[in-house]
Length: 249
Ligand code: PEP
Image (tube, rainbow, N blue to C red; front, side, top):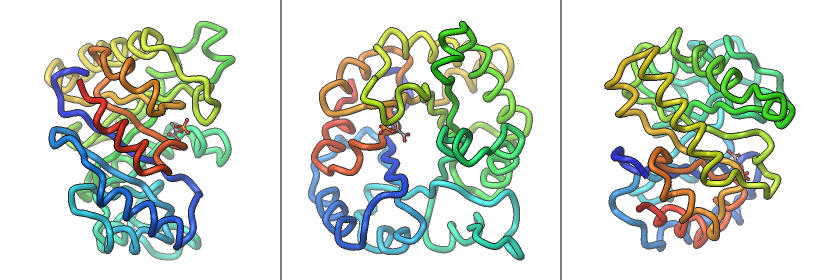
């Protein structure tokens, strides 16, 4: 881990029921978490209220998506104002499942990020290459293109955490090696230095996501430019998620 405060997010995706979420919240409320770590969980929209009302204030809550502007006649969407109204502090944007399954593009994601940040939500901004892009030697091109779409529109970098999530590692059990992850994290930091500022490059947390679990987190956390994790599957198990939070080095 680098000098920024370690950040661990749990992305529950489209999983859970009232009962399973009650149990997960209770496990998280009783878990021992290192004090020097920002911890965030991201439940499905329909359980956000339940979670914000029952989860310890030690852990902040994130949405998994938000609308590009003020709410209104946008059937099926959820606005940033509504998220703030129920106590949500963060939103995950640009997740690979939204890019590649739902079809969101860089510009659409950029608009969402700009709106959320302007309204005071923190943004977990996800980037990452597909397997065929990595195999074609395009990892940096893809990550920098996705990063630029954020950089072109965001009002400031104060409330952004960048999540590098290689798509081939998400939900596959194929975690990137610590060296593979570190190589991209350092390149992302270098891109920020050249294209935004030295200050933003050194202050912005760059977290890794893709099959992180209780057994592989410690080695990844040792890498200098890995400032935390975005965790999918393993965040549905309270004790394992706590192990990942406590892997800060
Ligand atoms: C994610 O959804 O952001 C993720 C990293 O998932 P998993 O940990 O399950 O690979």
